[in-house]
Length: 464
Ligand SMILES: *Cc1c(COP(=O)(O)O)cnc(C)c1O
Image (cartoon, rainbow, N blue to C red; front, side, top):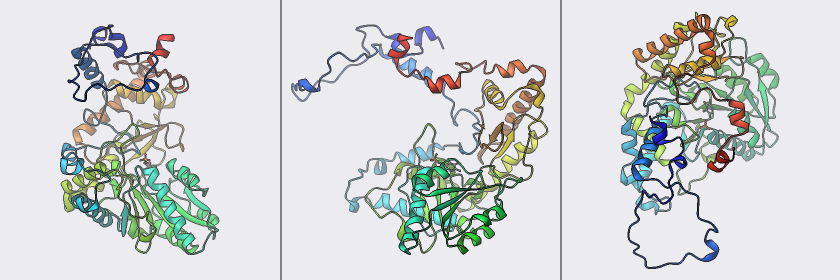
């Protein structure tokens, strides 16, 4: 791209008086905007011709990295394939054109989709009912914890103020519990990465409202002791909460409802292939077991992020009853294949079978000084999105990889080859890795400066 011609900022291309638009004839007669609503000065807007604007933004969009143009092995976020048929279905005017305040009698089709999606999720999870109101996973957690609180309150059991959360949990778990006004109690993990049942035993009493668990947990490991844990938590009167943000490895293999969980959320935007990133859009439906249905938020005319639900349902229908059972096994196979192919060069702190994702603790050879950050930046040079880095916090150099079930063996082999090449470069030419990326439009940015002193406006840039 010719930066001079198409510019990094649209303002740099501006010429006073140049126009890239034409307005339609005013059909409404002359209307004066009241004086008090007018600007004191003209807005400072770029003035460009149409082709310059089109090329400027098209070229910028080509700098974006997405699931549609490259492998995106971001752990804990499940960045999976977003089929175009989902978009077509979500954009059907019969659904996309609905207004939230339309009379219920005119939205039977949309309500049927909600009911069918709810039935699918109930069958996949072994739970009894779902609400679709929450707009994200974290929102679902908060809703689920409020359901649990409402359940305890309905029994006059008002001393339950504690929520037990494993130290490996996603950060939203303790945050949601705190926002819900509950006290967070951390349960330790064993060296194998799973919950320490003996430690848990010491935390249980009649002040426990719930135990939150993620399974597979944030290390990608299956929590083997769930039946025992559920029994212990239930015995002291608490409920079991399942963080099903990334339910893909479970689909077709097992169901949270059968394991003793009472309440859960699912991220439709991770598990069921709806596009996400940059904070939206999402849907975090909350499901409950039989007997808790009445504690779900009451029915209102609004149904949450409906377009996301349409996409998720399209994905479920595309797979069908038989293929949906392959999602979990394939996600698990792909992750284990990468793990086994790289563990001679990358440090695998917890060996053994993983589920849909796993965590390396940086390169095995620590003498080169090449960090996880360097590996992540070097991957960009080879056209791959970086995995999740420095999360989970249990290791210093976490590098968390999730391939998802949709990737072909060729794609995965290509990624493995590049990861092996980077490990070799770390030994032979570490400076090349430490100064990466070299082939991207922008080189290595100063993360701290960018976070603490972001330059976000044209005026600020001009002033510098
Ligand atoms: C992504 C994620 C969440 C939070 O979901 P959001 O939609 O980002 O709010 C919670 N728990 C786990 C395990 C996750 O991976």
